[in-house]
Amino acid sequence: MSIKKLGQQSLIYGTGNLAAKGVTFMLLPLYTNVFSPEDYGIVSLVFTFLGFMNVVLHYGLDASLLKHYVPANSKNRISILTNAYISFILSTLLVVTILILFRSQVANILFGSNLWQISILAGGILFFDVLWSIHTLILRAEGKPVSYTLISFFNVFSSLGLNLLLVLNLQMGVLGVVLSNFITSGIIFIITLPILIKRISISTLSFEYWKKLMNFGLPFFPAGIFSMTLELSDRYILRYLTDLDTVGLYNAGYKLGMLMMLVVMGFNMAWQPYFLKKEKSEREYIAKITTLILAILGMLWIILVVWVEDLVRIQFGSFSFIGSQYWPSTQIVPIVALAYIFHAAYLLQIPGVFLLEKSSWIVWVRGVGAITNILLNFLLIPSLGIVGASTATCLSFIFMAAFIFTVNRKIFPIEYEWEKIFIITIVAVSIWIGVSQFSLNYFSKIGYTTLYPLILFSTGILRINQLKRIVT
Image 1 (spheres, one colour):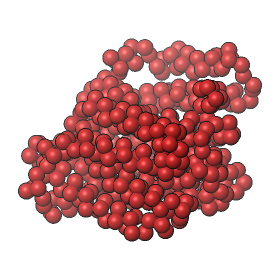
Image 2: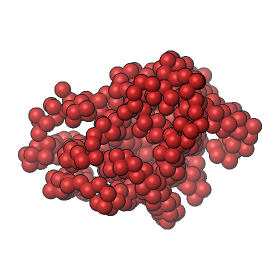
Image 3: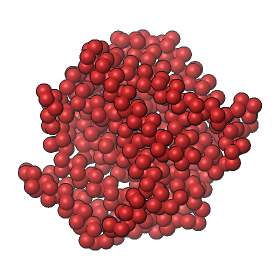
Image 4: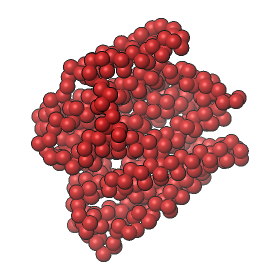
């Protein structure tokens, strides 16, 4: 795969990922105008739980599946996929059974709600999500971003339509949100199941083959737990130290900042198959792609910093894009978005541990991030509230990026374009300081927005022909 194709597939995957993950962002106008911060806090905890358990129920086997499936021939692919998929079915059914049996306790303890139906629906969502995510992972592994994106868009339209029906029209409240997710996940599972059926064979089941897959994937299990702890534990810590209202307010601002995460994840979906096809000795491409990605993410960050206050106040009839009671949450958007730029810096350094099969380092790096995040949350939230929670997340991602850089200096050194990265950083931070220090009108905001690309193009960090080669 060329850099040009990497760029093209990143755009396609990015569109699909933006659609699939961004559906909650698109539902912000509904949730923040209909729900009180307390009810939205419950919704936040439900989706936090689902996100965390999705990682638990993949237990690193999805990473191993991708790693082994991409370079394998057709016959071996059948065996790899069959052994992984049956494992996912059995483990997910076990957890779903537990959720059903202890539905009332789960709803009260984890979601802060007495609606036991939420626990049953959450179990169903987990079962469908864990399995259909493997269906779409195969599309990624086989280089079929268009099919992946079509499924993602169906996810969007189904979720939006069902939320409007169940939450807005039928006024089912929090239960309507979870039910709409359950129905959508079930439909996607059904329509993507043919992808799986023609690629597996029960006759290839082998405990020894499964052990081989788990030997590579198992280190990713704690790594995944640490990763989700890093990204999601702040909601539960906020609930413990404050209340559900604060959780709801924080989640609204976090969703806006996650616009950066959607772009980063879209890139990563194309990035992993791209570098897995490279040789260990090929490293120069990583430095060039790192500079380009950081430059583009810097541009998106500046747009968020400059325009977020205007974005949340856009009116749709009697609704604003974000309900007025949630407007104070915009103060954390630049911090959350910056956190995901450092997450991108971490992902850009992953090829070393993958290509050298030193995946155990992932555990250490993410473990540092998770522990740092928990400690900083308890330290900063009491005095800074939601700003403290977002700052804790950002600092944790910085520590992760620095840690993996230190590891790669020894096992997979890269000659990065430090001068260009320094210019990108100085320009972006300077604009952020300028925006935060002065009251801006529309003309000055446009000026700040255009200043960043002007400097990067004038210094040669970004070039028109470079961008054209990527996207055309």
